[in-house]
Image 1 (tube, rainbow, N blue to C red):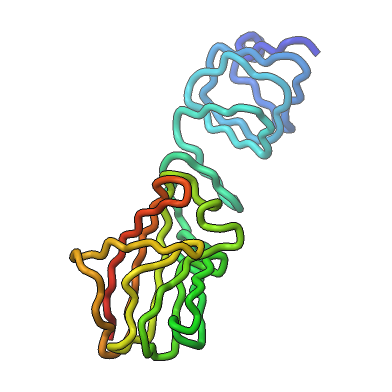
Image 2: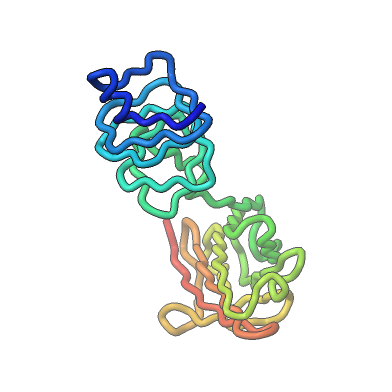
Amino acid sequence: MSKIYADSIASRTGGSPSFDSGVVVTGVVTATSFAGNVTGNVTGNATGLTGTPDVTVGTVNATTVSVAGTITYNDVTNVDSIGIITARGGVDLNSLLREQVNITAGKLSDNTAINIDNGMVHYFTTTETTTATPNIISSVGINTQMDTGNTMSVTIITTAAAAGYSTCVNIDGTYNDVKWLGGSDPSTGGASGNDVYALSIIKTGSGTFTVLGALNNFA
């Protein structure tokens, strides 16, 4: 089949060409202008189309598609977007905004190993009785797991008692001082409720860390 020229067909037929059962093109479709609707099946190459037609397409197989306007599409399982997404039917956030909490039916002073392989939040449900030094570890070691300049946040929740509190931490079994919010070490635990230790660990060099801490009581 040779090229189909829409303008020449129109001049011979006295009007616009009409294709009821689709057009199968093995060569090239060339048109000076196009201002109608395309529905059905069109295969092959189309060049030189101008105007503002409505085009209904079943399947597009292309390496690159460039669209100056807006694409509307339905029944999409996954969307990977760098820009802004406007969602018509809502957004499912069930897989986001959630953090695994490692719950220990005991007290921190009896279970000082804080293994971040089990999560970044550790909750101890037994009322504390004495001071404790949390030992923050992982299966590969915190020093191995973090690069210099990396930071991680660890939260430790204890069941509060005045005698139970922490003033420092160990990382991979090695003592590290904590720079506490307010400028001084904790000297007592909460009278009731839960004490929450929020620790930001910054790796500053091989085996060296800056630890920033805040202690708050929730009763």
